[in-house]
Image: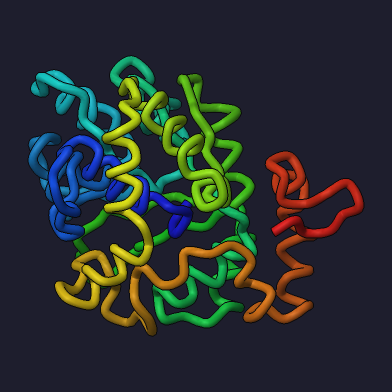
Length: 278
């Protein structure tokens, strides 16, 4: 789900694979493009997405990923924000036959709502409306073309369940909060999910080079091309858990807890007494 820690994981992976003497450039991260990139679809589908309705785009996307897989010689790490849904032909958007595994990074939706509001320059009520909407779609552009295709998100809970319960693939779930509090163990889990054997020296170096302080310093110096134009703060903003307590009002927090509580409880974001943990 957007703003759960995807980019942070990619900076770590880039630094780990590069094994260099200095931090990797945040504007040149390793791995493939985002799965919803329009240019990727246009290249591999053999037809431009701008000529197709959303339903036909969704029906072709599994074929796009299969075609990409046929032409690569090494594992390709793809960034994904879509929920793992099925198209109108009943086929899973991300086909299991060309997917080696899934790394699902999950984050407390209370903090995630605050992070998304800053990232997109939108109000918290607007963000929470999306987070709690079972039919949520992002980038549903009807009057102009964007660099990405529309992406079905579902609600936060629906998004989580679509991947961890219904994907039919090997899925490793890593909590953003554990990446903060227990970085060595959490990032070792990330390496294992990607079938990469952990090297202790490279792991420590990659953790240092992808610390929030290092990433913030780079962003101040170089900018970051993934930051949205209407963002009201840096992309690498806080890197802390529990900031929602300072920015979410009680009614908004209660709405998230009421509608997303079952999945929050499942992943340790609500304790047995019904109180938020982080």
